[in-house]
Image (cartoon, rainbow, N blue to C red; front, side, top):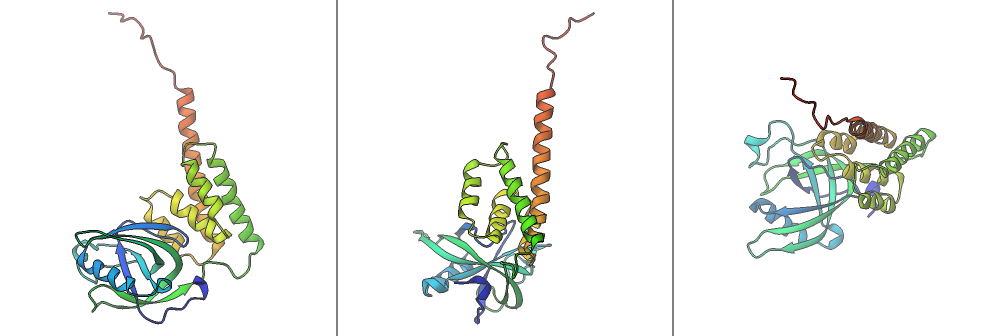
Length: 237
């Protein structure tokens, strides 16, 4: 599938998630236990492999009292994921693995089904033209990622995977944002998901990485300058 050229005709299942944002290219394992989402997975698996799509959406606002309904507020931009693995458990639950395939904006919803469904419009992930400003922003992120190798900020294995698996500049930015931005910063990940311009996605990620590096270096400086008062001075009393 070519995500930027893909145009779904039928409503796509929506899987609202609290505190979780998937990005194109990322791999997201999910444990499915609620009845409505068991039904959703069952319906999706009845389709050919090439058409097994679920859109993950970030729950937002005061959604808690509406969580059990199909009307809990979600962010307007979602990530289309393809189900690439599925394991059924004996009690009816299941584990699935999604691979992010495309950004999409919800244009209308169908809340009458057992689970939420929506019509969406695909948001291009790859830029039409790699202008100099885009190259500069992406190259700046590459340099920041390289600098993190000299720190303990991130697992070196994750850094190697990001750089080796990124097949394009857009994929590099999305994978780095998914793996390197703290999971508590869901609003920032959602900001990158919603942004149509690659250079802006790169700039937002770059600011986060700069701040992370500065914080880490400051912490190292504090540790290096720490003077332990040992042995303690004799008590003058």
